[in-house]
Image (cartoon, rainbow, N blue to C red; front, side, top):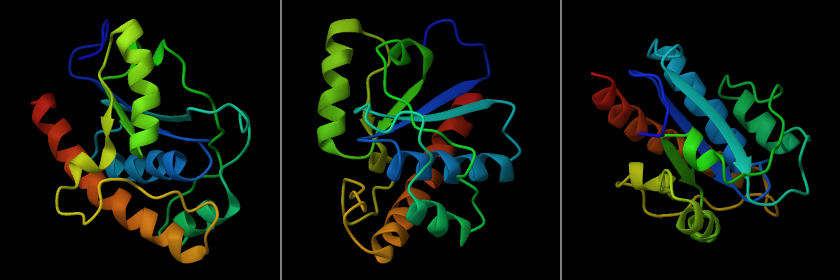
Length: 165
């Protein structure tokens, strides 16, 4: 668990490259899962990117539209960049792909704190280990991302429920 966290509370950070497609989608979808489970007062959720070029921007319109089709509102979210302090603030730091994992592990090796992991580790039945970046593809890519994130969110929530007992 992260340092100085309240007992019986868990914090989760989702990380992708620019924080406008995959990680805000994960934040929004996981938030909806947590609310359905009635655990929103016990689980803090955020997202960020390893790059800083989208800081302050809304999620990609295609990600927002795909999420909205599933009843998930991404419009309040704004991109931010990962900081070394996140390693101490969050109990789970979950990256969308191996390159983001390598980037965050560089910070982790220098600073300690929560060891980052791949988000799809929580979806062992998935046929892939990384959530693909849908930015340069069509709408189907955003739907595929949502499917993968939904599967991993179920596994993550099950793990967190065990910790909160």
